[in-house]
Image 1 (cartoon, chains in turn brown, green):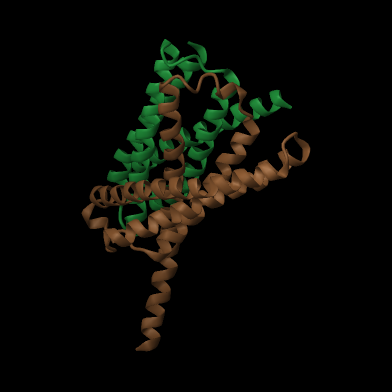
Image 2: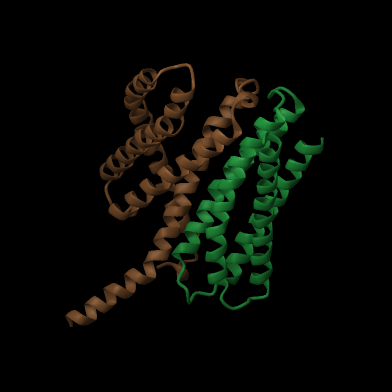
Amino acid sequence: MAETAATSRTTRETVGRPTTTLTAWTLATTNTVGFVLAVLVPAYASGGLSDVLPSLNTAVGVVAFLALWLVVGVTTHWVLAHIDPSSDSAVRLTLWAGSCGALAGVVFLVGIVVGLGVPAAVVGSFGLRTVVLLAAVGTPIAAIVGAVVGVTAGLLDVVLLRIADRVTPRSDRR
Amino acid sequence: MSQSLHLAIRTVHVLAMALLVGGAAGLWAAARRRVDDLDVLARRYEWLFWAALGGLVVTGVGNLGALGAPGPGTRWGQTLLAKLVIVALFVLGSAVRTLAVTRTDRSTPLAAWSRRAYGLTTVTLLGLVVLAEVLAHG
């Protein structure tokens, strides 16, 4: 009996794992791309981006996007491993989404500071103290912005999951 | 270095779009012919789809910086804004499509559903290609 239950659990986990990972991969990329577009579209529409974009370093932009994608991917996978968007309470979902968003914001900022700020301080004109000061001031801001973005993204994810549940053919649902 | 980087970014942008359009059109055709293992093909495509989409967005922003985007008040700028809004809606719609695929059982016949889903994906992507052509060549 116990063996049957264990076999059933193992089978379910084996079958479920790729689907869960594809879900996390989908939501993480949707959130990352959605965040970039949510910043890009209003910034361009307001006219503020046309002068700024050509002055930005393309390689740095690509690296920053990949870092954001990685951080959002890891936190999304982590959140989905601990909560069930279809059954957990709204408070629990909000707390997890906000906490992981804040963590993602701080990790992303620290990654940018370590990866870009420190090397720039070593070879550039401004000192390491300036970088540390920027990191110290930026960390709580990154946490707050990350929490707000996390809650918004979490809400969007729940909506997408519910719509997906509706458009999946009824006989096909798990 | 800069020229090579921008060429590489444009190349990745075009290849990523080719992968998205080709994959969606291929799945559409496969669904119409009711081929076996459609669900396996769909799941593989969905994995690649999100990788390519992320690549498309980051290289798209890189292209904007490299080419120097005219202001939003110009005809070019209005076309770009329209394209970005369609991309945003397409991303949301694609998320629903992929999440629906993850909810289907492997034994479930997906042909009719896939025909609609990947047909719509293909048509939307072709529309975005046309907008990209307008932006690139006027």
